[in-house]
Length: 163
Image 1 (cartoon, rainbow, N blue to C red):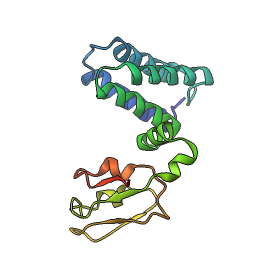
Image 2: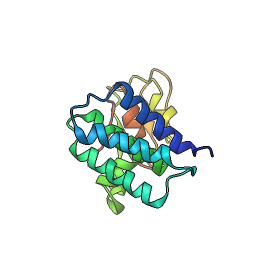
Image 3: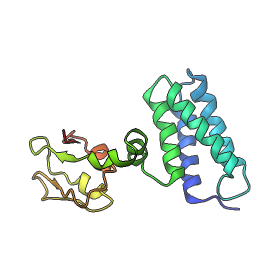
Image 4: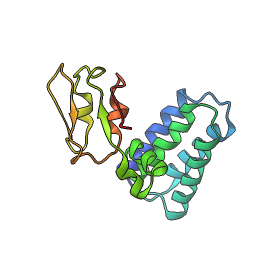
């Protein structure tokens, strides 16, 4: 039976990480990612069972909290986000700013730092960012769902959370 698309994406992330990016220094990272990979690939069903998903979540949180480097932490977060059907930014924002506090977030584009490359606008899931190429872009706050995708994709550091 073929795996669900999110499981295939998670397996692809884990396979790339375990094959050539994992340094092997952290036991939790090295063995935890292998166990996550095993739990995702061993099942005959398209998606992990409730118990397997619970174990994958526990492993992901363990890796996130015990990995020595940011790469190990990010791999665990990426896998969990993919399996939950969210972007990594959405998952991090929900984790650190749950409930009504998320409404207090406002992303802002610094017109001095913005180069007008449009990468933020192209990555925005709600088309809340508008502008003209090679000129500063702006965020339409009533359309913004505060997922943070724009900030994660801006290579110039022009997008930040407004104070």
